[in-house]
Image (cartoon, rainbow, N blue to C red; front, top):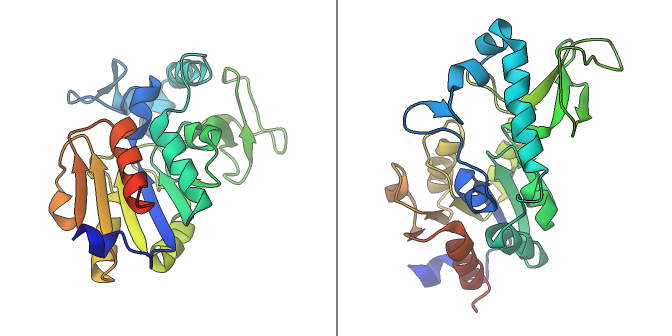
Length: 240
């Protein structure tokens, strides 16, 4: 099976990454089994209703996450660098559920952030008004283009993920699908493997543990942190 998958005909790869890739960069996974994120009910800090109820709480929560992401303790890890290295050999497109900038810091050329970006904000009056943002955000910050209230550029529960047109295009044109460090529980990302299976294209899952979708993948690397297993995957692809 391995020889059939890691063959010389693979030119373009679509790679989905999740919290498991960022975990060893000192970024905690999105939510715990108790439905909280960093001690907060996720519906208070990751849902439009929570934003309506208490904008100051939501801003404070993401200000802390942003400050942590920009702190010296958070850097790309070996998994990020291994994926970035594959740009040299393949058309390698990363679709990430993560809201950090660690893939870009590691040097990956194409990174599509389907759940948004912690280091940017958008205007509530016009979703197309997006601005880089590395400082604290408050309800006194308004869009420089139209005056609307600014909000962190993160996709919350009940909201549509971003860039699906581009992702759908990459699904159709990629030769291989790789899922790295994601639980396969969040739609629509967890449906990508099914589409690749229908197209009879090879699929690989890399995760600390098997997931609910593991049986759909042609090949799996489990039981090791992303800093080890993603490097293993890179070496298999490059036949090292």
